[in-house]
Image (tube, rainbow, N blue to C red; front, side, top):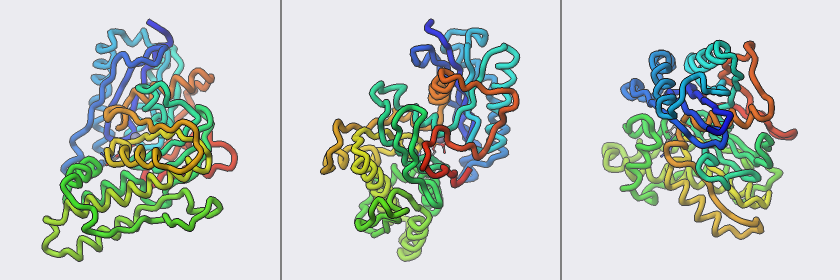
Length: 361
Ligand code: KG4
Ligand code: ZN
């Protein structure tokens, strides 16, 4: 077995996930347990999420070790999401990891959840290496980064209000669709006609220049309000219009996400794009990004869009183990005084970058 063997733990939201990777970054064992208790409430209930993590963490670890055909003593390094996320949920993973690493006298690494998403695609596609432009889109974040190297990131843009995934979830709720909203919207949008309703493209105007503070930033709350207005306007016929409204919303969100990412490609001349986070599971986003990148009239060198498979796009322990390995190799081992932090700052932001704020967590 190639060492170091890294065990990664993810409990920041509603997935309890543990993965074991070896020294060549191959996944040896991986378990993702999605909590279904939240479905009836139409969103994640923090207290229930924390309790469910606590109930399941031991068995999820045991199953990941069994699949990897190793025991806990074979683990060289532990990694865990220390933030951002729901504090009660984070605490379960962090306390488990800290205590286990201490008991076994092994190092442990505190991982930033969104840096974890940045490492998702490279687990499956070795070319998903910097330099690249990264669009990280999840339930709590919308970040546009220029990664010049692993661990060196220039923050170009971020959301000023709701995160992209949050917008999908809220719009789904408005349309009477189940949680999580992203996959539900994608499903019904497939049968809808996006041209039946006109929705705005917030913060996207052709006249914007790179000096404009809104050039790379996102805003999704206005789009959500526009969906409310459209829903009211169709009145009693709302059921019939749900697929069309969902399709129009998805089209507007994807248009903004792709357009801003391509601005970054044009400005930096970096033609490699990495998509990460739950919203990167969206097929329309993936296709449009690839299609419009190909058609872009700019001098960028090789062009390629990288994203992880569905399983590794959503929250998972493998991306956390991979990010932990990177930080471990740089000597960034956590001490007993390291805590879970709901608003952990994004690591490695270069000077001149703005502070990456989380909108929901
Ligand atoms: O990264 P993730 O699994 O958890 C967080 O870190 O938040 O992202 C979850 C978000 C949810 O808002 C969910 O609705 C969205 O990702 N999502 C999608 C799709 N699958 C998940 N959004 C759009 N289309 C999808 N297919
Ligand atoms: Zn995530």
